[in-house]
Amino acid sequence: MDYKRDIIKDHLYCFVDENPNFNSDELHHQAFNQDYFIIGTYKAEQWCGDKVFQIINFIKDYEQNNFGAVTTDLSNPEKVVNMYAYILGEEVVEEYLNQDCFVDQRQKEEEEMDAAIAWRKDTGHRDKSILDEPSESTTDYCSRMGFDM
Image (cartoon, rainbow, N blue to C red; front, side):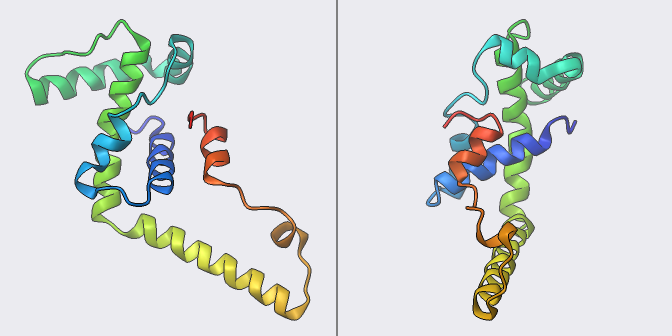
């Protein structure tokens, strides 16, 4: 299931940006188990949307296969969202650690932007969209994505 996978991936990126010296062996635990992914019943219900039953079945299958029994309180929307994020977080972290494409792509984009800005400054070319707008901080990005920092 890939429902809101991009948001869970963004959560990981925010964590990595805020914790550049993370322990790769503990990354999943640190990013998805030390704090709640979402807090509040209303927020959790809204986050699940019309996929709530698919999410619950996804959690049930995961827990049956990994623990032999369902242990998450599936009547609590907050626990459902946090367990779903935890499960998908395993996959996202594995991809992040095993494939450098995430880090390499972001570094490449940053290098290309830096080169474009340097070229424009060197040539006197003014492109307001690049030079005059401040870049978004990690904290602002995480806030915009709905993560409490």
